[in-house]
Length: 139
Image (cartoon, rainbow, N blue to C red; front, side, top):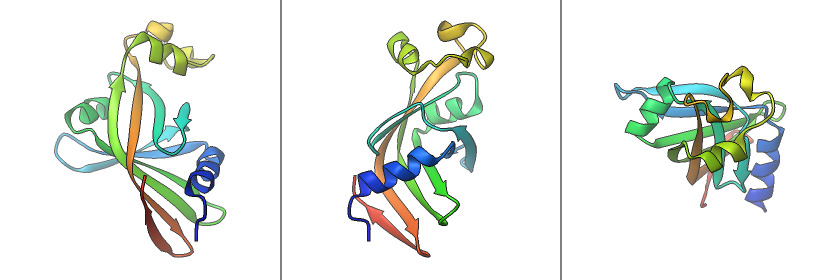
């Protein structure tokens, strides 16, 4: 039993160096992409990732914003799936807030690079897998 989902899931998420982002492609097939850990999170309800504006995932999420992110704790064979809605953010304030030193290696024109954007996932459903069973949690 999970007594404090926000604390338990937050600790699991913070230990992960990657996340799996899932979305539907233009043909309606599911796609899973490895992403670097979120740059920012607000509890277990909002997550912010950086990516290329020109990527297939951005195009797909603009068409169908339903998405999920999955974080796995391999050591204890457990994970948390967070499903919700994705937004593609390109405003200067968000891009500057999420930007980190070294991002120039991905976005050569810096924080104003038109190929740099932020994916914000707002969580609506949570499913936790542990001890060979899944449990749903409300947001």
